[in-house]
Length: 413
Image 1 (cartoon, rainbow, N blue to C red):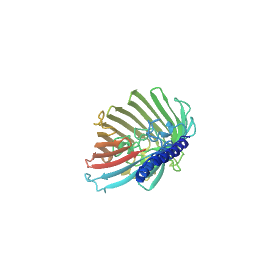
Image 2: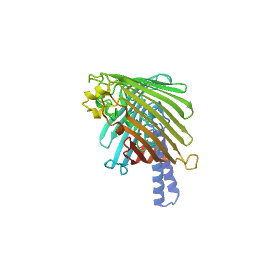
Image 3: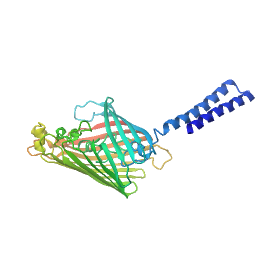
Image 4: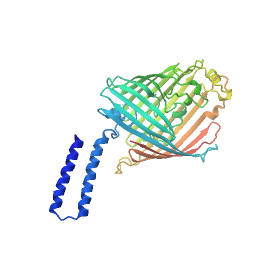
């Protein structure tokens, strides 16, 4: 109806403009220029009406998802489109290792959501990585029963850690995701399954049953290779994951999550695995502060390593442990600079994927024990665009320098 009304207004304006021309001796060029400007303005309004509802503006995060991934929940009904992208340049001139610098179109993402009605919602993320690899990052259906109890099923993001669900580049400070939330918590971590979620007062929770990791992908460096990503996933074993967050004050949230189950799948090995983490997230004034600690326990790590044909010097760790804290402050907060944000930040991090070695292991555990200091600058000219520059001082237990400099550009819409 709005579109038809504006078209009618356009016709009426043109008729009125033509009458005015007949009564004046304005030059032909001026008349044409004025007509083109009016036509362009009204056409823009028509296009905005046509596409603005399909590609709505960013709003608040809903159910722990990023702002763009949350778009579909803010609609009354129908299709919603969003997305984000990241480009990353990595320079290894400060490293003792002989590594080649890289410049990568890391991710280009499209969100497609559809709100059928007030109860049923479809949300999907289609990801293109490294400019030539396509993945489904998540694809799930929600049944929104009430604020306290809702249901979700499909390919879901596991609600573990800080970045796994909040992984849009304008949301986190660093040019790269932390090493902890890569090797110990294998971000981005998604599996097939379903469960319940909701908010009870100041608390929010999620509880899912999902297909387990594939222990065949575990290595001395972590469990990241065990992600099945929803692709013909082995389902001999299932795991349970639960999360609880509590907002102790406006902008300040504490919480934790636990994941556990057998991970051997069809390998004939009892590989019980438990991973737990606790976190704090604070956004107050111009300050951003995050803290995360995590640890895991793998039973029969030696048997699983043997089943994976790993030598004793490459055995999977029985226990992993890691933590980080990061602090940033927007030095333009409270100024008259509009949307401009300039946030220096620092992250202190320790990662150890061999904090306890498997029985019979001869792994050089110092190679997998990292101390990392990341110092960087996060610049947002507008809320939807971010440029990040950082340097990472990285040492392993053998005191090898693995330093690198990272430059990233990200966007979200």
